[in-house]
Length: 167
Image (cartoon, rainbow, N blue to C red):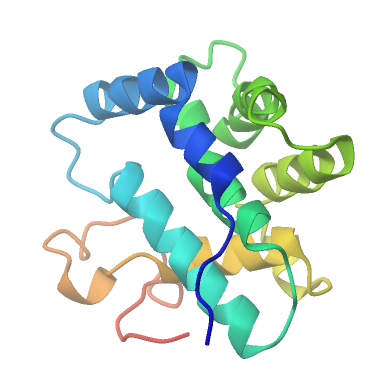
């Protein structure tokens, strides 16, 4: 079995100057946050869960697209949102130049941005088997509510909380 995936462009993202700056800003903005944080650990959890689902149900979505979408889906939380456009749109706006700098093609950028824009859109959960739906699902599954100290005051509904490990 060969697990030597080509992750060249994904590694360019994590080494990208702007991306590293957004991670620093996220850490600063969420300092003292009681609820789940949006950091590299969360991004990698989302990527790995999405990759597992991708393999399990044989979606055949390129691993670099999965990891790129996961690494970039919440970076909009690193910046102010004075126009209240939402972190998904902000994330897509910040992700686009990074993706092009890292060598992604137009159709790949479009697919990744669509996933980022829809990663918290509940209507996507019942749509086709695509990167957007995969990212939505993995993002929700990544939260360890079953061990969270503040789950009783979390705004997530009881039905949405992950009170058991599941895929």
